[in-house]
Length: 266
Image (cartoon, one colour):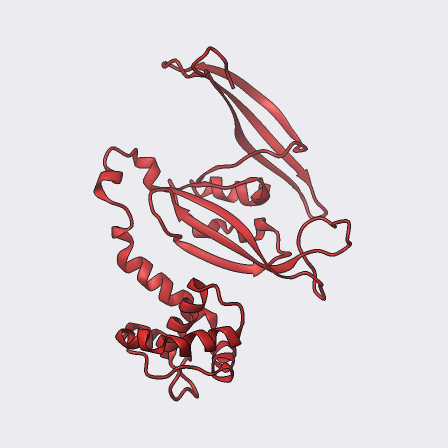
C-alpha cells in the first residue's frame, strides 16, 4: 500500500490499467539480478519462470511494449522514493549491536562519498567522460554518486548525473550539518564549497592533488603516544584565481607516518 501511495502521489499510476508500480519494481529488480540486457530477454525469462512469481502477487506479466511504455511514463524518482522510504524505515537494522559496540562517536557521523561511471555506449553523439583515448572516442553513460555511513551496509543517498559531469557538482554543502564528518577523493575538490562546509561546522577529509597552490602558515610535528609513528600538521591557505573573484580557503594538511613491525616506516 505504501508503494502504491508513493507512486500515485508522483503521478506514476496515470493511464496505467494493470502494470502498476509493484509489477514494474519486481520486473526491473528481477532483470538486474538476472543480468538481463534487453526487453526481449526480460520477457522471455519472465514467461519461462511465471510459476515462480505467484508468492509475490504478480497477476500480469509485461510484454516488451508494456515494459517499454512503463519505463518512459513512470518517473525514476518514484523508485528513488521507494528506496529512501525503506531506508528510513529499516536503517536502525543495517548494523548489529555487536558492530556498534565500542565504536567511537565520530564514526557514527562519518559519511563516505564516491562515484562510479556506468558505461552505456561507446560511439558518442553526446559528450563523454574521461581523457581522450587513442581511438579518439570516449565512453558515455551515467555517473552514480553514492553516499554511505561508515557503520552501515547500504547507501544513504544515491544520485545520477551524466557521465561527463564533474564530481564536484555533486558536493552540496547545504546537505550537511554541524559536527558531520565527510570523506571523499580528490575529484570533489572545490575551495569555495570547502569554505562553506567549514562555515557550517562540517569536517571534511580528502586527498590532495599534486598541483594545488597553497601557502604554509604553520607547521607542527606530533609524536604519537603509541609506537605507531608521528603526525605532521600543516596549517595552509589555498588560493585560486577565477574571473569572478579570488578564493581563499584555510585548511589543515596532515602527514601521518606509520612505523611498521620490522622497523620500517611508511
